[in-house]
Length: 105
Ligand SMILES: [Zn+2]
Image (tube, rainbow, N blue to C red; front, side):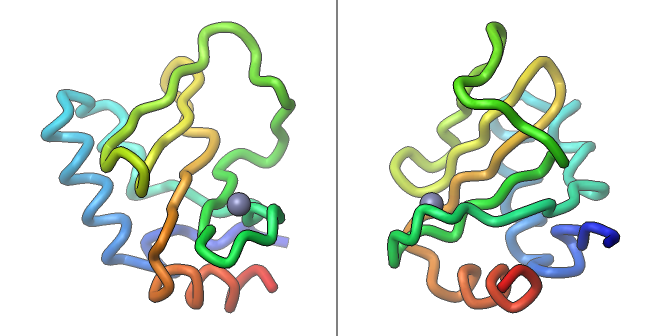
């Protein structure tokens, strides 16, 4: 299976994240948005959750050195390990949830 790219699934989110990362002073991470792939979606089952994983394998708890960027506190967070975006937490965005669930049922 080839993981779908965020920019194909939800180009508006890719654009939004890129802009927020540039504003946050994270140009390296912003640059990665173009190639960011969605490997799985969050399976927590919360009705307001549209979060997804952007690495093929992850461990919980995350290893030392990971950080969370609150781009829109309470709604849009990135979990980052070094310069790798591991997880995009998207909350209260039904429009995006529908698109993400369409590619990852
Ligand atoms: Zn979730």
